[in-house]
Amino acid sequence: MLRPTAPYASDPLKTRGRLFTADLSRTRSPFQRDRDRIIHSSAFRRLQYKTQVFLHHEGRHYRTRLTHTLEVSQIARSLARALSLDEDLAEAVALAHDLGHPPFGHAGERVLDERMAEYGGFDHNMQAIRVVTRLESRYAEHDGLNLSWETLEGILKHNGPLLERNGQPYGKYRETGLPFGWQEAHETFGLDLMSFAALEAQVAALADDIAYNAHDIDDALRAGLLSIEQLADVPFVGPIQREVTRRWPGLDGARQAHEIQRRVITRLVEDVVEATEANLVEHAPPTPDAVRAAHRAIAAFSTRVANELSGLKAFLFANVYRAEEVMQPVREGEAIVAHLFDRLFLTGTLPEHWQERSDAAVNDAERARVVCDFIAGMTDPYAVELYQSLFDGQPEFR
Image 1: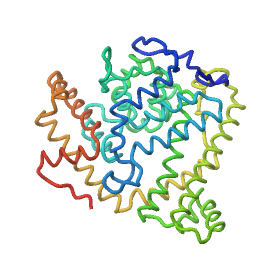
Image 2: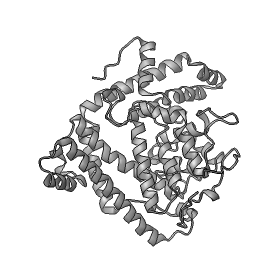
Image 3: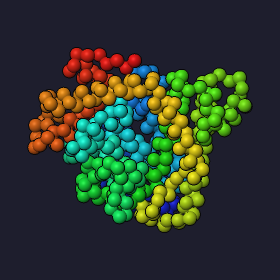
C-alpha cells in the first residue's frame, strides 16, 4: 500500500481510528476502506436521482448529484497526487461531501431548514455526518459506516471550521448559528470544531468549487440558458472562450463548450497547486496537525483567481441559477418538500422502519427530526411519487 511522503499529508497508518474497533485489512488502508464503504452505501447510490442544478426529470445529460460527486472525486485525487497528499482520503471526503443533500438540491435544503428552525435547523454537511454515523444501517454490529476520524473530520469541515478560535461561529454559521448535531460531532467523535480539516479535505472542497463552476457552465450551454458568445467577457472564463473560438472558429458549439470546460478545469487545478505549494513553503507545516492549527486554509486558489471566480459566480447566479427556466421547477420542488414535511409531521404516517423511530420519539423535536431524516434521504422521483400518492396531484415542473 502506497503512503504519502509529504510530512503534512495524512498517514493512513497513523489514523485516530474509528468509533467501533475494526480489524486492519491486509489489502486496503483505513482511508481506502472508508472510500469503499461510502461507495457501497445506499445514500451514495441515491445521489444518482438527486438534483444538482437542473431537476432529474429534465434530461439524461445534465449533471446529477452522483455525476457531480464523481467529477469532484477525480479532481480531488488529481490535486492530492500533485501535492503528495493521501489520495484515498481526499477521494473519500469528495465522495461523501454531498450525502446529506435532500431532493431538489438547495431548494429542498432551504425548506427543511425552515421547517426545522425551532428544532435546530437543517445543514447538509451535518446531515452527511448523520448519514454516515447513524442513518446507514448495513452492518451487523453498529449503525452508520464506522468511518475513520479523518474522513469524518473532512466531511464535516471541508469548507472550514464551525467555530472561530474565540468560540464564535465561523463563516456562514455567523448568521445561522451552529447546526443541529454539532454537540454530538464534538463529544462522540472528538471532532474539534475550531480547527481546519486536513489538507486532503481542503483540496476536496476546492475540487467541489472547480467541478461545479465548470459543469454548471456546460449544463447551462446545453440547456440554452447561455450561449458561447455570452462567455466572452465573463471573469476567468472569458479569456478561455476567446482562445478557443479564435483557435477553432468553425467548430460546432458542443465541441467548443467542451474545450472551454476542460481548460477551465485544468487552469483551476493548476492554480490551486501553485497557490497551495506557495502556502506550504510559507507555513512549512511539519505535520497534519500543524495544518489543522493554521489560522487559515492552506489549500487555496490564488487571490487573483479567487476574485475572478467571485465574478464568475455572480454571472452564473444572475444568468443561470435565477433564470426562470430554473426557478420555476425549483419553486415546485420547494412546494413538494414543504407539503411532504407538513403532512408527514402532522399525521406521523411513515414507512415501517421510520415509523418505529417516530414512535420512539419523546417529543416534537425528535419526531420532526425523524421526518426530516426521512425526507432528506429521498430521491427526486421518490419525493414526486410520494407527493402524488398523498395529495393525488401531479407536480407541474414546466
